[in-house]
Amino acid sequence: MDRLGSRCPLPGSTRPSIFICLLILTASLLTYPVLRTLSLQFLSVLTGSYVSGTYSIVFVNCPNEQIARDIARAILDKKLAASVNILPKASSLYYWNGEIEEATEVLLLIKTKTSKIHMLSSYIRHWIKLRDLLLLFKQLRAHVVI
Image (cartoon, rainbow, N blue to C red; front, side):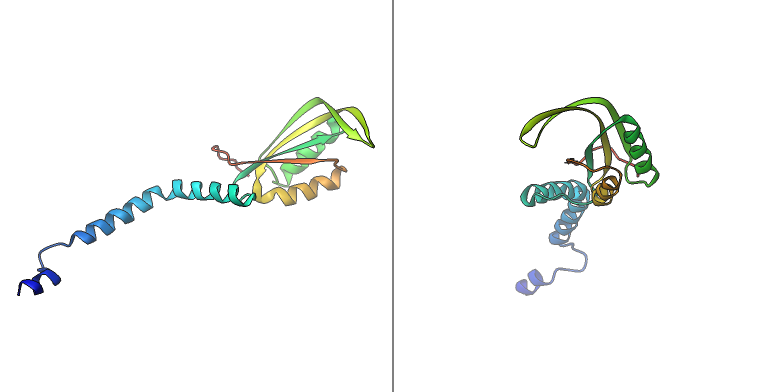
C-alpha cells in the first residue's frame, strides 16, 4: 500500500514538480527579451550577417550639398530612413587610377532599419554613381520610427 501511495499522490496534496514547471515557465517568459537579443547578437557574430529588425547607419558621400539635400528629402519622403544628417565639406582622400586624389564632398549619415538597406542602396544608386557605400550595422538601444 505504501508503494501505491508514492505513485499516486492523494487528491489534496500538490506535486512539487508542478511548481518547478510553473517556476521555469515564468522565468522563461520574463527573460525572453534578453535571451532573444543575446541570441540575435550571437547569430550575427557567428554568421557575419545581420538580422532584419536591427538598425543600421549608412554613410554616403555626395558631390555637393544640393544633391545631398535632394537625396535626403527623397529618402525621407519614401520612408526609407528615419533620419538623415548632412555633414558639409568632408575632405576625402582616396586612390584613383594608382594616384592619391583629394576631393571635398558632403557626407550623409542615414539612420534606417537593416531590412530596408537593399531598397535604400538601390534608390540612392539611381541618384548618383557611388564609388563606395559604407554600411555600419549596429543594434541601437533607441527606437527608430520609420
